[in-house]
Length: 236
Image (cartoon, rainbow, N blue to C red; front, side, top):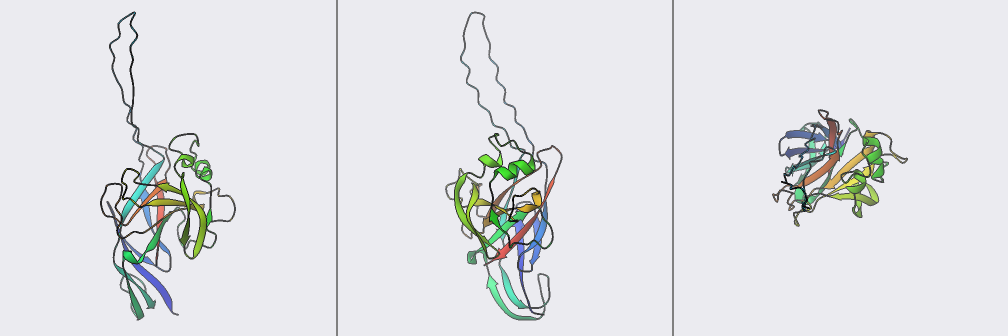
């Protein structure tokens, strides 16, 4: 049996994960609890009979979202047999590096994911499934609010994808997280969503450093809980 497999090494900021792909395959990543509320307080001395102006501002970390970013190393696409990062029986080999392009998606569904039903989906379904209040400023409804664009993964082109712009304070940051569903109907399970982006060989991240991708994904906002995501990559 002749097969096509892609061997990839993903480098994350805190993880080193070796992934072997058969067309589009996966590795898993546990996203820990990221709840961190910074409560800002001010003091003001008040005197009876006086009226005092006090302007207050503060920042709060979200507990609804987590992010990953990293690099895709030089690798290859081959025609032949075998598996792993060093397959045997290679009939023909094509070199690949990130400048050739590719896509990466984070999904909750493990195993052999079916990409044939990729579709656009309203961010309101993310709020519903993850239990977020859609009126909150960090809800999915108010996160995936960038100008929609087409996105192609596994040969499926999704028109007018909802997108979230990551790294908004770095003008050179090219990355968007595209929101997709993996079924034809309305999603009711976390496993039915995909959060995807394009690899970029010359991009810089939110830290103004050179990396190949950024992704933002929803998480369980209950303290001390985790979400497990599976990372899928497609080479082009």
